[in-house]
Length: 168
Image (tube, rainbow, N blue to C red; front, top):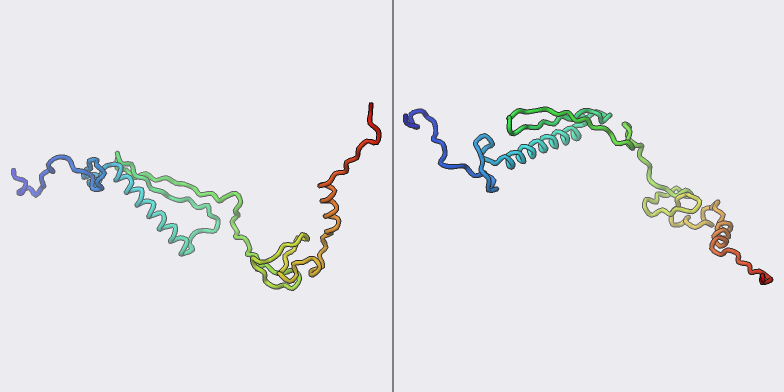
């Protein structure tokens, strides 16, 4: 029987090299790729699908607010060509809660209520001030600078007393 009569093609002459030119031999079952290149291609496709679906959920706002929904990942076994499903649950981080944090308003001077942003000055009394009110005499500071200075000097310079009589 001739191959033209049956409509079948003749098997190729010799082994087929991988289409990614990695140097290994491919097969028709793996789209003329070696097993490693085929596996890499499948993983890239799965990652692209997962990324596209997660971006779609974020853009559409269709994800639930609790963040505990399971994520479905599909893996393919190359030897048996069966698709198996794996379920992975995503847990929120310990520091995060379900509700979003309320936004803080802009930082303002405690004396004149002027917006200071990043240029605000923190005083030792624990408050934030603008450039005009940053000095302690301009904002009626409650911090006791004299006592703090005395304590700092006392710690830095301990009292040294010599004995009046030498011990024999």
